[in-house]
Length: 463
Image 1 (spheres, rainbow, N blue to C red):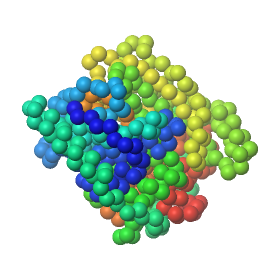
Image 2 (image 1 turned 120 degrees about the horizontal axis):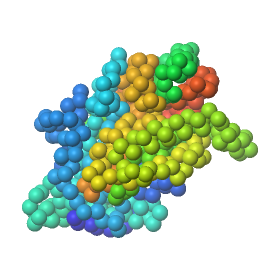
Image 3 (image 1 turned 90 degrees about the vertical axis):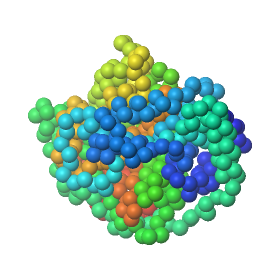
Image 4 (image 1 turned 135 degrees about the vertical axis):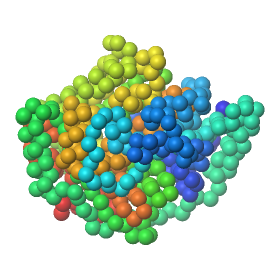
């Protein structure tokens, strides 16, 4: 491994230097004061893992067997020792796991409408990663030399690739685009009345004893002009809605822009952490009213019950791959405040058992319970039936699995996918027996507002 410390550069500035390189991945701690100490950037991967229709492939060549097992095998080819003096992502696979990978884990109905027909996963294997430590304002270029197998050739490739990336960071930057990030008319898969009726249906299922809760989301879509710039949109979104687990993925015609506040799974050595969000209230511009709203959320019986149910689900998921009695809840229903909403956030931790690794951990917990419901399988069946459209990237996960075994992923909420001239994003709400259908509808709009603002679409109250 070749490591080079660089002069501090703001991650967004580095992004503009690499913006037009193939397969740019930017894992962006846009709110470093909220858990997000590190950001990472990579491009020009040496290999690509993809899952489509439940079938995994690598560089276009079909891989036999279960896609999770295939990924585990691929990662094992490029093992690296962890360097504790560097940020955790030191080369590895990065990209997204779509929500619809759930059908590789459970027998679930396919949604009636396939959405954008995106792959179920794209992970690029990066031999070079640029890492940023926001706390200490330090920056490193880490070059592994993979996929060379011969040690001397790997060292030579590592140095050469480091030189290439250092030159790019010192080179010209993509020009800033400050034009409005406008879109056409927005459409939802639910009318107001339709969403309220969907919430009531879930409440009825809960009262009948079918489930305890389920997350139901609206899908918003709009057509874009030929001059629309997703990169400029992302820069505007991160300024309006900074988030600790944000991301920008650029894959040719497909761009994914996420401003997620929620960590799904972090694996640091053998230590596991997940941070489910359940409980949301819109913020107020008036400071006194804003404090009152935060206090209302903290005191909300409905929101605390919703959060606690998901904590129990995640404790069970982690217990499948963690050592006995290691799963704990160091924080339950803590308040976290973001640009447009207050959230209740819990923390669940554990110690990974001996033969388990990042992939088996992800498989055991996927998709996250905070965006499905409880029991998870029945909730996912209801989601497919009621929403009818494939969620795709939404409520999946974005992040990295390192060659050193470390992992960090978000829950892909507050996330927009751009596929050619179509923009799509979702906003959902967790439904329990105590839910008020109209309040749940308004919660989806509160979560969506900053994304609408980033498109300069004004208020979304017309939906």
